[in-house]
Length: 503
Image 1 (cartoon, rainbow, N blue to C red):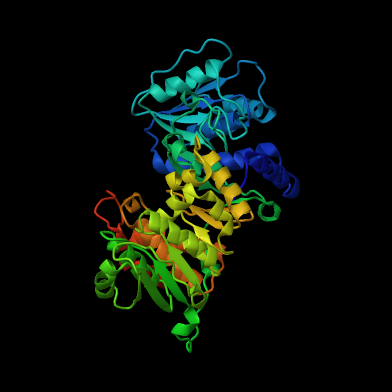
Image 2: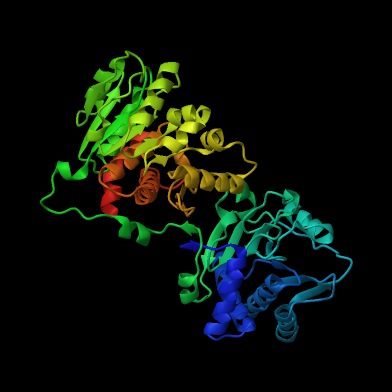
C-alpha cells in the first residue's frame, strides 16, 4: 500500500474529480458517508456527538457527517469556527445543507467569541477543524480550542488526521496545539505521521476508509513510502520444488554469543533453521560450543580461537552465501578487531546486528566497506550511534535513508512499524507485530530469519521485507490478544513454521 505526502493526496483528489468525473462536493459526500458508517458502527444513537468544524474542506466533511448523523437520529451539536468569515466553497455548501436538512442540530457559527460546551465522558467529539493540508502549528483561538478538547473527558474521533498534526514532519510543531484523538478515520490511505512513535498520543487507533479515490491515479503516482500488505508478501515468496535438497537453500555463517550470551547464538540459530536455510554453521567461542551443540543439534559449530568471545575472523567466508554477525558478541577490543577484519575480507552479503552495530557506531568509516546486499538491523538508539542523534522519528528516518544510499545497504529501523529502507531511498513500513516483542532476544530471532532468507538467494530488499513481516506475524500468533505479557523470544521461534505455512 502506498503512502503519499499530503501534497500527493491533493493530487489524487484532483485526479479522481477529473477522471471519474465527479464534483468535489459529491466526493466530499462520499467521504462523509464512509465516515458516518464508521462512527455509527462504534457509537449508538444515544451517544451525544459534538462536532468541531473548521473553515476548510475538513470542516466541510465534518458538517456533512453532522447532517448524516442527525438523519440517523443522533443528538448532534455543531461548532463551526469561521474567524475570517471565509468558508471554502464546499464547506459553505455543507453548512447551508445542514441548516436546511437538519433543523434539530444545535448549530453554532463561531466568528468571534467561543462559548465552549460542557463536554462529558459520555460525549463523542468529532474533530474536523483542520485536515492534512496544515503546514504550520496552530495558534491563537484554534490552539485554545484544541487545548479545551484535550482537557475534556470526551472521546475524540478525528476526521482524516488530528487537527494540528502535520502529515509528515512535525519537527517544528507545537505539541500542545495538536488534538489527542482516540480514533483517527483516515480517508483512503494512511499518513506517514501515523507510523511514528511520538505521534501515537495524537493518532490513537487509526482506521482506513475507502472513499473511491482513483485506483489508476494511485497506481501511476510515485512515492518513496509504503505500508506492506499480505498480498505483497505472497508475491515475494519463492516456491520450493519437490526435488530440491539442502544444497539449494544456501549455507549461512552466524557469528554470535560470548561467554554468558550463548542464548543469543541459540535463538538466532533456531530462527535461521526454522526459516528454511539449507545449512548453518555457528561461529562460537569455545565456552559456548557445548551449549550450542546441545541446544541446536541441527547446526554445525566453528570454534573461535578465544575461549570467551569472538576474537578471530573466519578466513573462509567465500564458501557461505551470507555471514551474520552481532547478537551477543560484546564489544571487547579483540572483538572489534575481528569484526573489522571480517568486513574487510568478506565478499558475501552480511547481516549486521546488535553489538556489531555498536562497534560500527565507533568506526563509521567501515560502513562504506560492507559487501553489496548487506542488511543492518538497528533499533533507534543503535541507529543514532551510526547517524547521530535525531529529535524525532521523521528526522531519524531521513538520516537512515541517507545512510542506506551512501553505504548501499538495506537498513531495518526496528520499532512498532519497523521500516525497511533501501539504497534507492524506498521505505517499506511493516504492519505486523505486537508490544509483547519488547523482550530480550527478539532482535536475535529477526537476525536468524534474515540470514536464512539471504542464504536462499533472496535479494536484500525482499529478505528484509519478508523477515520483518514474518517475525511480527509469528509474534502475533505466539501472543494473541492482550495483555502483551509472558511471551519470550523463543515463543516467536516456535511459531515460525506455522507462520511460513500460513503464507
